Image (cartoon, rainbow, N blue to C red; front, side, top):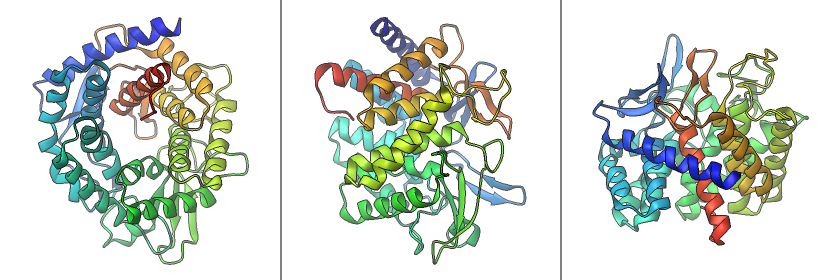
Length: 367
């Protein structure tokens, strides 16, 4: 059953990849509205305003990564060409001083492309982006998340999402950048968890001492709720950090996050957008499910990751004419953005998980 389901998902992915590769609209796929991709300008960076923080385009790397994953799976050079053709538009963001999402932008695009093609120029751009990300490390021991470091609001800011921006630093194979990643991960392991294993979305720190000023959320239902995608970022981020460092504290953190996620998921195939939303009709987040599955595979909990991937694909693979591989994701319920839509990062992590299943079947190392 699973093999048929996975084969069907790859078929749909190639149909959707052709749409991404041939799209005439400017910008990069972000979330769907009315069944079609909303595309964002790649140069739009995050910024503070009187209304608060605006993320800008933090997702452009995932559509490029989706095409790279199709190339990795099929060996068809046309997918590599399609991915590479989109890299120049993104390259200028390698020095973006405004966001931790440099990892999301450059890990699935330049870094993955460098690994698959052995292109030294792609690696050089990826390393430049990694150094930009590492420059956000604060004396208090964490990477600042949101905004120019000239702004104290930025220096105080930290989110659980940063844990899955760290793979760009792990990929770098640079000792200093690894040190920055490990420092952040250990700080997050100490400060983001509640006793039950759930995580906060956002923590404000004193940038000099690392003392916690405030804990809460930006995209969850409330300050003490557990935003399911944030929990998934924790599983995958701490899982990868443990793989890279062998630090037992990071494995403990990853398993705490995973145990909570799976316990709250129960028999449901896909989590709600926030585990505190008790409404039976609450929006689901298929992207949280596949990110969590990806993390479980890093934790040597592949059977659980396989089951979660299977249940999500069975419930959410797009079999119609809409854009996107996975339906029923939720970008931000509080901001009413991308609710019950496809989201490009969910599609990317679905393919990353499918690739890992293939790797396990052939005995190759997980990527």
